[in-house]
Image (cartoon, rainbow, N blue to C red; front, side, top):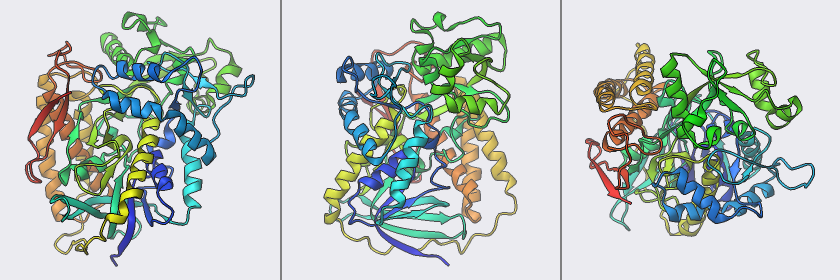
Length: 541
């Protein structure tokens, strides 16, 4: 039996951004927290490196800002970068108050600050090599003990619900249809304010460090209801994921290179010095492209990451999880080189939002990887992502706390109607389309692009969209179908954005336009109406 729920705030996604936002909301507000799986299934739980913040007296806000601007390759929004970086220490203090245990130096008793690519100082707060797990675990414990928050695990968002907004004359978001994976019913969740914190879309690619749920759900839902998105062509590929058929989504943290690990060819030869003056500490896009180039040049399946020259005690202390994960596959990183390949890791573009996390749709907010704030520009610098999640979780919650008393209770929306659909008898279609999508996105819209490759991808994406939409209209929804529908939508946005950018900048590298343009622009996609989502404009920075 279908249900209708009423909450003050609906938060879709339970990574660090969603959990932190829920905890920052006023305790007098009723909050629904939607998790597609369990609370520990998201990308945040897997984050290894840490959180960038200026805490060392030798470091400065300006240095962190400059490093971020350089990594973003001219496309960052300076005001956003300054806003996020200036809130770094405040954010760390809040996490410590929540109970997060960061690694400390034995000698000084201060926080141990790690070094990562693109950072000119040691400024990475971490909890060994499992910072995401430590932060997420603490926030989950606090969320579970907070009485005004109701957790809905095994629930998958289908689409946003909108109504006319009498105040602005635009549409307003009044909640979402949510598919209950246990009952297989699609229920209506009404809310005065809705927050999308559902993460990125790296599952569009064949090789990814992300969990299965990273299917761009929030970006696709917001786009379908008229929200602009920006810079979807900038997909970050993590340079070092463990290459092993059994090692699904096993990322080797960038911090390991910050502590002296080197990249080697199968011959044992180092190569990063040929591509960047900083060698292994070059920005991620440079390292990923260098690895991809060398793999294709010599025709090998993987390259190698080597930290075996460090002492065994050093490695086990700083990287206990990497050590344990590799040991599962008979790789002892204190003695052996680690086989690695680049893999899709982070979506730098997303739903356009304001400083308060507000989207183009009234009462709808987006935070974390699903949003576009202007922080990352053309390339996200290591460990800035969790910082962004936490800073915007606080700013969006603060705005909701101040404004929600002025929001009216939504009018009753219609229940989900599935009276004219039937049970699918050919789920193999979903599996086949999912595989085809991820393979051609990897081949044609991956680390190195061309006009021909993007054109091939465009033709295939149109065929898939038609097939999937026909399937969606005629059969009951399922988690796989919902994710595939969202992934194909976001993949189209990535392709269209890549076609618009006629230069190579940051994470977008094309052989047809290998140079950087003198004109610096964001790529902004605008859904003119909900049936024709093909019109694209660009906006000068």
